[in-house]
Amino acid sequence: MGWEKARERVRAVRSDLAAAVPVNAAQLPAAGLLWWIWSTSQDQYETGYGGAFGIFCLLMFAPLLLPLLGLLLSAVLTLPAILLARPTLRWSGGPEWACRTVAAAAAAAGWGAVTTALLRWPFVTTASVLTALGLLPALGNAYVRTRSWSAWGLWWRSALACAGLFALTLGGGLAAAATGLIPQYEPPELTAARLAGVWRGDHGAELRLTPDGRAEARSLPTESTDQNWAAPHHDDYAVCAGSGTWKPGKDDIGRPAVLLHLGGACGGDTHWSVSGTESAPQLYVRFGDPDAGTLRTLDRAGD
Image (tube, rainbow, N blue to C red):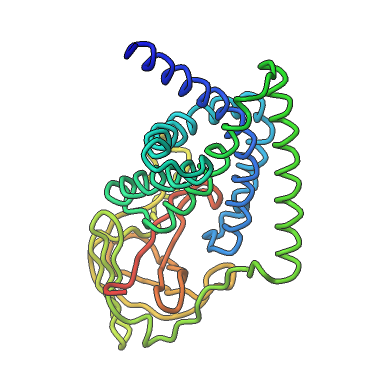
């Protein structure tokens, strides 16, 4: 009797998981489009495409990618929610939709905690996004798995739902952009006094700017003086330590920037463009290819 119940539960979980894959696949293009629409209100660091090329590639290869991505998301996010929902339903006796919603949020919170600990992603944002991704499969697969649809019938319905969700998201995003609900990113205008201070980045990079125009650098990337682009081991930038001067100005496209000049053989003059927000400013520079080069950023120490 115990083995029969265990096999029944395994079959039920497999049925839920099989139903979750096309549901997850159907929502992924719309989720990707939502992410791209949101990213337009963030600094793109002048990459030029703003992620549009990635969206185009996703659409081109969607028939191949979506089933695989749907399976991955189902295994990572939906399956834990299913495993949590069943005992929750037996213990609480509440409505199934409520138990599935709670389980989806709990699974998302668990992955949010993992990514916060390992990757330092913001917990609230990550957990909220994962909850939104997990909610439709958690609620929808309970309906889908009860239908007597063939695999082909399930997937063509998934394709129709995918197209509908994408069209709704696109229309809503265009309307939000046209009405100003999604503002375009504008870098903060920082005075020379705000620019002065200590800025730190990855790999021990540090830049100290004093109000009198002096600069001290440590492990700081700067423009490479090696112009032999065809060389097999050409570096996009040089890593420098030394002193020099700085002044506020504009970069090549008119953004507020810091023009940094370090003395000696410590790389070339480098424009560090202003990014971030008034409360959490950043400096950044992109070396090499403007669309696919190396991006380095510095954060204001203490901000």
